[in-house]
Image (cartoon, rainbow, N blue to C red):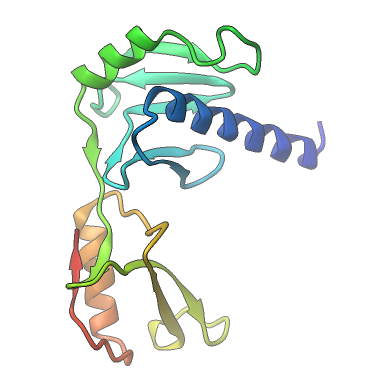
Length: 167
């Protein structure tokens, strides 16, 4: 299998993963983010779903590190089983609390840190420009990572007109 074929297969799998969650949580914002090879499902830009994918199978866990798999779903483009059993999903979703994730926001605004641009390829903080927007905020999996970003930006030569906060 060629690299392009593998990359396409990973993209197809991640689209199915997003479609699965959007089907079961139609009133929620769902994003698939992180490393495409081991994507993370983010719900409402606040919670990480307790699951992981291996090939085309979603493994739903109890949320504990190395915890048991509660149930699995083999993703497929074939109907009628494309989205699996809704009752099984709902039971898992309602039973196992999801891990909180965090965003960095400019205080008293709806602008969130989304990433940064570089003045040049040097990765030192003195050569970056943070980018803030209303949509698609960068998700931090721990509060300490979000706080570290704020600390590094405050200690850089970047002038911040408003304080930043973790949300």
